[in-house]
Length: 496
View 1 (cartoon, rainbow, N blue to C red):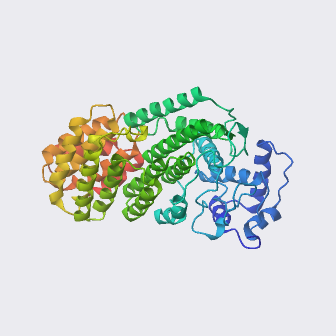
View 2: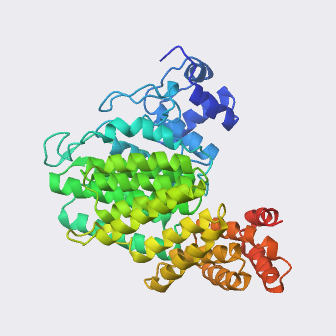
């Protein structure tokens, strides 16, 4: 409330390193560039924003978001600045006094506004060559706590917020594409584009097409600023959810972790707006996979619980099997071998029970037998850090996955090669490990996935005990030369 310091703005102001006078001048200059030359901010006004918690009128919050985004090299939203939006549907809590800075869940009809603002700022970072990796991840438990009750209620579908028929709703977002209402053909073309982007990501990694996906999502946000007939509106929300998941996955793939998390949460909201609860749950399961990758498996388990809750009773057996494999990976990371084996057994049973009586949604069609085996290999390879005997099972499943990898999803094949190589090192089979490691390394040259490099560094650490072997010594040198320059030093330390 006004009268209390805006601690979030104060913290960002301190990170930016401006004086209050500098910020006032920058606000006026940026506002003029954005079409608001009449703004006359001064030092005392900036002081009131920071020290007294005063919320400036539009367009100042958007101007400040743009300034801090450029200064800090990461996406900074209006909520990140500690400002409560006015004139939006639904009332929001004061984000300055909560552990839930994004005010999750968003009020109805706010998803398109958040989507377009966030993608607009993300595109601005891309244009200016900045890197959006400086923010902090929201804890998985915080997301779960904030969204738990919201997920237990029905969103009501795309027609729940007003009558159908094309009409304009409140515009929102920085740099938003000014779209017109669309028809069925345009929606079908958008759905087809998602599949093109998804195939490219699986083959080449998230770095090369991430900007294109974010731009497409920004355009869809503009389209969602119109109220279309329910059938079209629902499919548009589905496109938005699929693109947001893909933008999040690509961001995670290149190391933009807070940005990725934000896209996954946007995807969950978009899917629920479109009435697709299983898709909402799957989007949050991506957050869980991200947390395991970052070494926070306990938070991953919290998020998986929320993902299941959000999916309702509509989950197909194959989707449930996929969620089980993520849970098993988290359990393996925590050294819980018995729980991991039980969870993987349940995943296998669910997978084989899927008789495909109902068609799989497009976002589940890429989870096939080889993906189940690949996740089993990863779980056992992870457990082998705690129980070396698990390495044999990891080799078994990695081999089965590789036998079926024939569809051009090169990134998954790289991960399988690395799982196999790591398991072979743990199982004291350096010759086999060397072979699979070199296969992975050869394929990584044409892939933009940083996650593959992260996994390579994990494998590199295991080579240390074989550093006197001539073949492994050569492998280590090759890895050290191939690693991104900012990472090479870390590899040397890890393997020492």
